[in-house]
Image 1 (cartoon, rainbow, N blue to C red):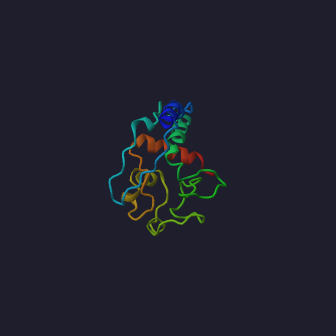
Image 2: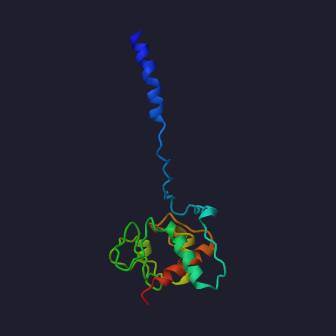
Length: 161
């Protein structure tokens, strides 16, 4: 009987302990990995920034900076920052693919002969494995053309030239 009354006394305390005043943690960003050659993953519509007045370069750069958030899990864009999971993309527009010395590129990208023009970046960001089969960048395809344009405009704004 003593055990039963002890259990009855402890149960309400356990129930209250299970209720916490701590807020529910925010979801974490997920990186989706797919097999090379597999169809690109669609981006959620909520992640796609809208650009009003595409002739307004400042708005396009701001939209590109916002859209680049999906890339920032692997890439940095600070002039003096070392590469991380992906190469540093500062001043990458106009450069040769696979040229940064502080990043271990795939042989496919190093031997691609690509110079990162707007058109080459657009095709690569739309489908990395389709543009350069064998690339190690198999996640992060951006389906929306306007979003890709904004990201490229943002990257161009970071160039040292």
